[in-house]
Length: 281
Image 1: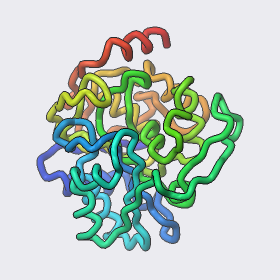
Image 2: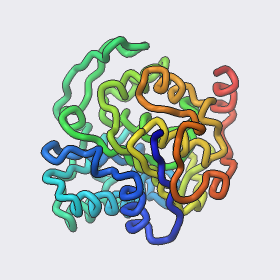
Image 3: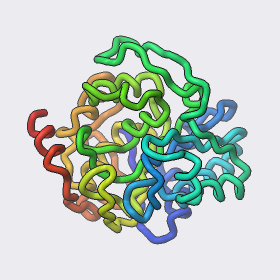
C-alpha cells in the first residue's frame, strides 16, 4: 500500500523534511540523476494568496535532498500567466536557490523535445522541457481546486513543463494522464500551508498549515483532494491514472501517516463549473 504523510504545524521547512522522511522519499530518488523540484507558479502571486507554492516548502525539500547527498538539484517551472523569474522572485525562490547553491531554471526557455506518449488516451505528441525529461521529478503543487480538472495537484502540475500549455486541454483529464505517463513525479509534496479555495487563481486563501507527501503521486493527490472535502473518485484524471497503473486513488488502499484525513479536512468552496463537470464524471 502506498504511504502518504500529512504533517501539521507551523515550522514549514521542518514539516517538509519530516514528511519526506516519513515516506522514505530518498529511496525513490536515484543518486546519479538530476532532481527537478517542480513548484506551481501559474502566475506571479505571492504564496499567501493561496495560488502559488510556498518557498519554505521548496527549501525544506532542498534541505532534505542535501541531507541525502543529492548531487544535482534544479528548481524549475514554466509559468502560464507570468514571467517565471518574476514569479520566483515574488515567492522568494531565487533566494532559496542562492542560499543552497542550486540551479534555477525557467522551463519556458528550456530546450523542448517532442515526445509521443505510450498508448495515449488523447495526447498524440507533446513538447516537453528537456530538463524535465532528463530529471527525477519532485512535484510541489499548491493545495487548491481547479475549474476544469476539479483539483490541481502533483499530476496536473506537470503542465508547467509543456509548450504550448494549451496543448494539454481538450480533453484535459485524459491529457494530464498521458503527460504523467512520460514525466510522472517520483515524489509529490503538496504545499497546504496557505491553501486556496474556489479555483486555481481565485486568490481565496485558507490557512491549513499542512504538508502532504508521498512517493505515489496519484495517492498523494487523492489524499490532497480528500483533505479539501473532494472525493478522489470524482476527479477524472485520478481515476484514469489509476486505471493506467500510475498509482492508486482509492483511499482504502492508501496508508495515511501522521494526521488523519478526518482530523484536518475542510470542505473547500469550489467553482460552479468544477462541480458541474464532476457531476458529469
